[in-house]
Image (cartoon, rainbow, N blue to C red):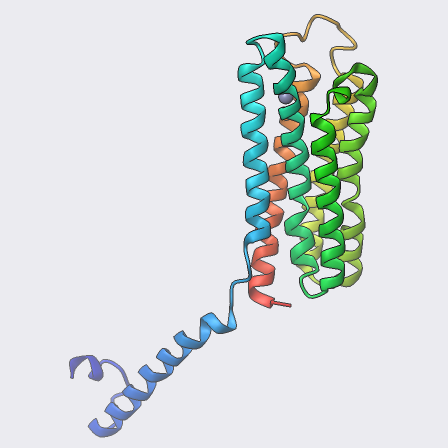
Length: 240
Ligand SMILES: [Zn+2]
């Protein structure tokens, strides 16, 4: 009774008072039942695939650099794992933007997802082949990684054409451009061996191209994670 009397204006009689309060409570109940249906969270698997790829990459890199000093033979395997991890990160990075941008266009969604999956598997396999490790293939390795990153331009431009009026599309594109810069600079630094080419021997312990490459990959992955959160919020609120 006390609860009811707190509910509504003083000029109502007791019976009106009770009816309106019950109605009011029912409305709230119905609103609470309907709300999850209106704001239905969309599937998370592309975002989790990206997080899985990023975790695999970081685990592979840490394992590689922890164990590669053991022996020449272990170093040989570990370096391959390092590149395979980065290839996995770059290819899974495409999953959230492509899936959430084209979830209402299944043809393009499958096309882009299929393409990056094949390219990712190809790059992981190429990273594991012994011939891939020889110095002559250094530029080829960098080009493969660079090409994989650069192939993201097509779905991003397509997304801008389809959703140019949506603030989320521009917001995520900003993050993607930044991510592309980090990955691109990482590949260039790696391929032309900056900065040790200028002062050989000075960066053997710290600051050499391979370390800068890892730091840039990490920065790219974090930027991508921020973009992923924007995609989730956008699609959770608007659906298709
Ligand atoms: Zn490494």
